Image 1: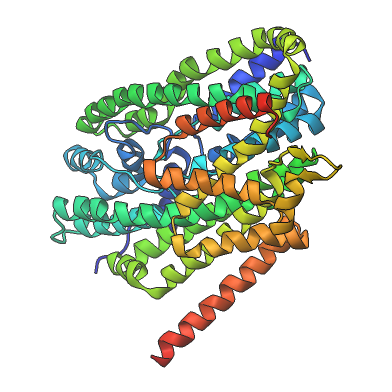
Image 2: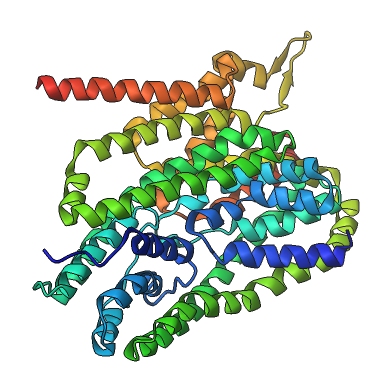
Length: 250
Length: 271
């Protein structure tokens, strides 16, 4: 696939997933693991796309769950740029993640711009409500923000993906060894941020031993994630049972 | 009580509009007010025949509103039943409807965030993440199907519950032990999964070795491993966690610090 077409597709994808059409559907659509599937289909290199997507996902695992809908960092912009560029330029996941981080930050400002311009449609809806124009309200709730979103979202990803591949290839060729190694270190540490954010979001200090249990279940016993999920579910259900018993007795 | 003019289909329509657009038109000024109003249109059109009444009802729902979009369905259900009573001539004041909305949106958001966003979403992603890490599309495709399915099922249950049981149901939901135990269960699973994933994906080790005269060599990582495997990754998670607890969500400060630390430790050969 030509870089031009790839850039167009990624621009459209970024617009559509960030449109937030479908509350939980779109929020999954904008996760790096799902963007990875799309990039894999476009480039024909599913394996690399998913590996980079998985690496990026870890950094942003906790970010989406922040209350109030304010994105502290935009996994979609990071993913829509770093995954295609990473696949096309043959980067390791660590290097692609390092490349993605600044775009994740940039995405926050893009979203602020969207939510500011969205205020226009509320005022428009006020006027439609005055006239009891139901169709107008539906347009203000769906159509106008979607069109505006395209103007805001598409050009950024298109331009960076279109011009980026060549630039990134040149850049990687001249990077010194110590800098490449620091990317590897970064890729190893950054997932810790994702987990730490999830810990704060769940926010139950006295439940942290469960985190430790999960951690060492893998370290000492080499359990897979599915195994941990099954045991954790059983433990949680049993604890519920004992708690209920206590209340019934008391 | 007058015969119900609102059908199950109308309620489903309302649910879908809110589900599809909950964040789409979200603005800083009134957040989800626009989509909430839009989601009420299938109901209000049926209930109010004159333009004056319809216009007043639409304006009533353009006031500030924001909650978690899955659990928010229960508020929709309650509001639909209140609007219906009002249209049937019962003395339901505008303030009562707005009051229910503003009163419930906070607690409902807290509940929804704890279950839908802090538990269900990361758990689903993390269960299938190993597939993605190995380069398989399954790691993305299954979460994309599973997460909407589960959350739409929750919203569907809640909007119809909210409609039939009214505001009492939410009060019992909020104070009942059932919700507490659901959140507890979700949190336990979520935290254990996060721990397991940290162990697999946070990879930090030190190549430091000290050689002494006489040929003895001390490999720092070996010593750390004899204490417990994975001490450095665990320390990284909790250091960042502690920072977030103390200083709030300064993600960019942390990102920048990680970059600087990585470069310095790479140059010095510590990590």
